[in-house]
Amino acid sequence: MYQVQNVDQSNVNLYEKFTFPRFRDLLREQNGASTVAGAVSCFGEPAGLVLAGVMEGGQTGKIHSLFVTPRFRGLGYGGELLGYAGERLRERGCARLELSFIEDHSWSPAMKKILGRCGWSEPQLDREINKIDVFALAKEGWLRKYHLPPDYAIVPWPAIAPAKLEALKAPENKWYPGFVSPFKEQPLSPHSSISFWLCRREEIVGWVITRLTASDTLYYDILFVREDLQSTGRGVQLLAEALKAQVRERIPFGTHMVLHSDNYANPPLIRFTQRRLKPFAVQTERHWNSYK
Image (cartoon, rainbow, N blue to C red; front, side, top):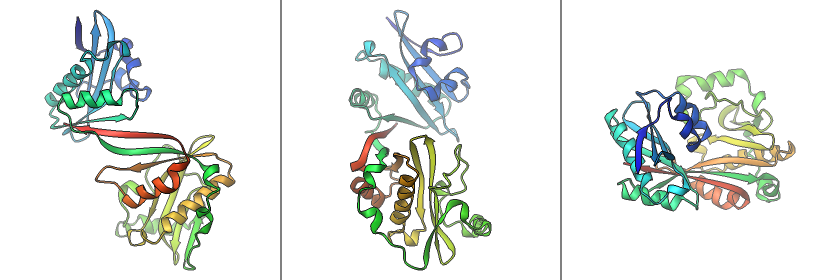
């Protein structure tokens, strides 16, 4: 006999191991108005957990995690948990539901079947995160073949004049989307030796921002050049400069994210990644989204 129930302070310790570490604080300190946590047990034994929340704006409910222990898989518990979370989110006013999951060949097919049975959309690839062996990539000739025209310069991150930064911040100069802004607040500061500005005739027209996430791994956070220059190859030159600097700093791995969702996909970047970077990937994470 199984039972689906709400998770609260009386039973949270039984189920917190069923979600990712980054969500455990949310589960323990859940806000009843914006968080949904449902658990399934079988004859009193914890069997699964769904954790969801109301996103900013209140129109979208997001499934943060869904897990059923291997012993109880194939019994319909995943669908029951999804249904429970969906009902609670609808009660809170959510008109749209979203679920994200990381591809895993051992259980992703089962996840897709559950979503299909429960009326969710066919999963769509949202983003891909690759971890690259930069030392192996450095042997490729294309890193050294690019040369900037004389009116361009690649400037180290700390060396840019403060007046140029102030000009770039001015509302009338915001020719870049907010999600690639070099002024976004981040937990980690840019790596000063492996982040660069691209200037054309003394004017900032692009940047590459990297952040050290582990002693052996550099995250390539933002690579962006002004829209009218995106077909000139300047972005590749910026990336090549950063990769060469990373090799000089003796940091072996680099991670980067490529967006595939319709609103943010950059087809030339996707093609470049597949051709030039992914052959040197030692690890790849593929994130999928489904909607209802």
